[in-house]
Image 1: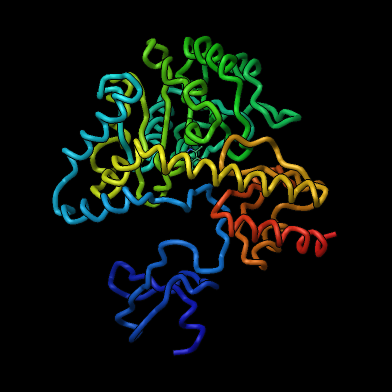
Image 2: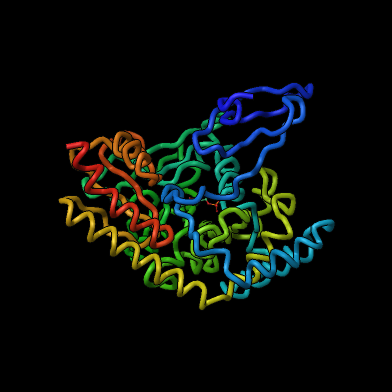
Length: 384
Ligand SMILES: Cc1ncc(COP(=O)(O)O)c(C=O)c1O
């Protein structure tokens, strides 16, 4: 076999034949033995020496408690998840002061978010800002059942709630806000958002994606969960993928009226998206204040490092309440910047939509943030 062979990723086709599908520079997939019996060596995270700052993960997780729980639960992997799912559902319900029927767990929050989108898509379009985490809502477009209607751009990249309210016409079934928003990292004023949700939910369902809520300075003040309890047509999504450091364990949830959850269950919410190890990790992490505080401190330190480096290099980023910063690259193209950073072993995001000069960087381990800081002047001098 040639070296080239080792760089290829092989998959078995339906008939058991091998198919070459892609090549990987980092050797993520390594083919061994004969071409007929190919074993893939799984890579569970970035290779050593790579600063993976492109997916807003918290690499300080899973916590010690979560790791122990994963090990214990994996030994019971033969069993379906009914009991463990109920345990997590009850914990979440208690924390938010709702009955357990108001909580639907899913495989990451993406599982529930797709169900929200597809369920709403049956009766109309989804209204969102120009820039938001739209990955799950795009499923309505992919399925050809509805569209995402986007608001005009705003100069500061913030969400214009007044225009959003005025844009809810009969074609709109669901309004989606992400708070704090991804990729901007901007947090909305909770008083203004609450007033918006109350008014807007009279016209359409309002989905508030709070994936980064626990990272904000005042999570309690920023959440819209109380509106669900008060009976407004509001759905709140949360995830264990961010502050809890469990992105690969795939656990998330929504808080919504039971009839809403029931209606959505047709489109993919249910026990079948859950697994013992993920549930165990989530249960063990949910009340681990020490781990969360430590993670928050690292994230804040990382943000300060990035802001300082940007300033030193004549750039700036939006004020973030999350574990990522949206950087204004001025005249530099974000895709070129990404490619040059990758040459320094720093992985960041490329262009969003037509925001060609904006670049998102996540806060990883501090030594990886330091790699971004060190690479910045080198890359900028190459591009100037
Ligand atoms: C705003 C937002 N919501 C939801 C998700 C989905 O995360 P998960 O499915 O892992 O919960 C992400 C992931 O980056 C996100 O940024």
